[in-house]
Structure formats: structure tokens, C-alpha cells
Length: 123
Image (cartoon, rainbow, N blue to C red; front, side, top):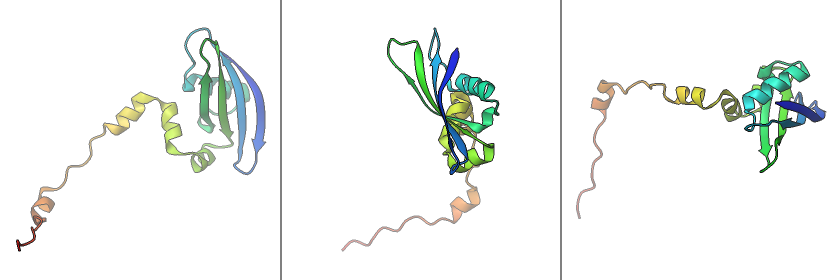
């Protein structure tokens, strides 16, 4: 995969850089993780500081447009970005593991204390 950074603008208000790039690949569209790792290498930052917004693949083309944000620290990324964007990067496997975690069962003593709903008296 080849990644060319088309524009790199700074946004000091959000403590980040906004990147637009062009990813060229001869096979399938590159994954978010692959693009994030390649951006980290080219820009010299940690992959934890990068959030991929969008990968736009056009039909019949071997290139995809990429929109990403590079924060100065992982803490500022978590401060401004929503949680689902980090889950996308981690992949479906980790997201499924988090959802499959067993929850604590309700205590049987608490269920016995609850009273059944009373029906209104007939008229």
C-alpha cells in the first residue's frame, strides 16, 4: 500500500492536525489499521493519536481518499472524539469480545423482594 498525504492543516483549537491523503492499493481497500500504521510512520507520531474519519473507495479505482485527525496525545483524542471511532479502529473482533462479556446476574434475594404489579379493581 502506498499513502500520499495531500493536505495537512493544523487546528490549534482542538489540538490536532487534519490530514487528507490518497491510499493506493492493488488489492482490496486498505483497513483502518493499515492506514493508521502507515500514517504513523510517515508523520512520526504514535498510532494511538490517530483517528481515521473516512475511507472513500471509488468503484473501479485502485485508490481511496482518506480523512484522518492526528492529535498531540491520546488523552486529547479521547477528549474530543466519540468512543465508536476508537472501536472501529480496534476491529470487529475486539468489539465483539467487549459485547460478549458476561454481565452480573441479578441477585435472587432482590427479585424475591419485588412485589407483583397490582391490577386495578373492576368497575
